[in-house]
Each structure stands twice: as C-alpha cells, then as structure tokens.
Length: 132
Image 1: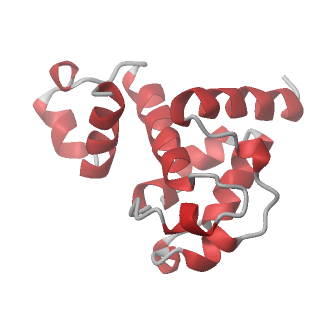
Image 2 (image 1 turned 45 degrees about the vertical axis):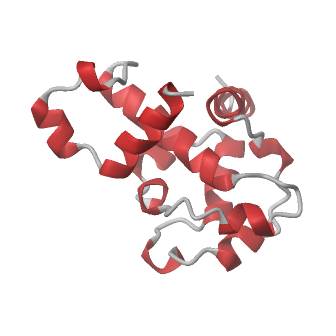
C-alpha cells in the first residue's frame, strides 16, 4: 500500500471514529499554540493531524501525545477550520487500543490486569464512544 493510500485509509478511519476529517487541516498550528500541555508532548497537536494525513499509524501508536491530551477543547476553539482535535486524539487512542486489544473494547471484555494497565483517559474515552 502506498503512503497516499495508507493516509487515505487512516483518514477514513479517523472520520468514522471521530466525525472529523484530518484532511481539512491546513497546518496553521493554532491548535499547538493554544494547547496548555504541549510541554509534555512528543508531537505537537498539529503534527498529530499531519501524521494522520500521511498515514503514519505506527508513529502515532508510539507517541505519548494522544494520551497526554487533556481534552480541554482549547484547540477546537482556536481552529479556523472548526476541527475538533480533541475528538481526533480520542480516535487515535481508540485506534491504538483496538489494535493492541484485538478490536474489542468494553468493560466486560477487560481483565483486571488490563484495567490496571490501561490509562484512565483511554477508558473514559472508550466508554464515551460506546454510550452515545
């Protein structure tokens, strides 16, 4: 699969997960400038979107940025394209968890050991998705 096809697949997956289209981002970086937790991130928020656009799923899986995102929605308030990056970060977390956990995510499917290891933010994010 070419990088273009991989980017397209990941964009389609993100649209389904978050209702947001990473392809709409033109990389103004206002989300990164506004984010209160960038000091702890290994990728800036606008870089996460760029990675989504490029289909760099493995790099996103290894990034700590989606787990650090505070989901404060400051990025969404500053975006001139009205993108909700917090929802995309949630989509990235779900994609990573589903890949690691075999495409299932529900409280009854998790062992006590998994509940101990998974970040609380990922659990809350997943439960919000399944309770809509």
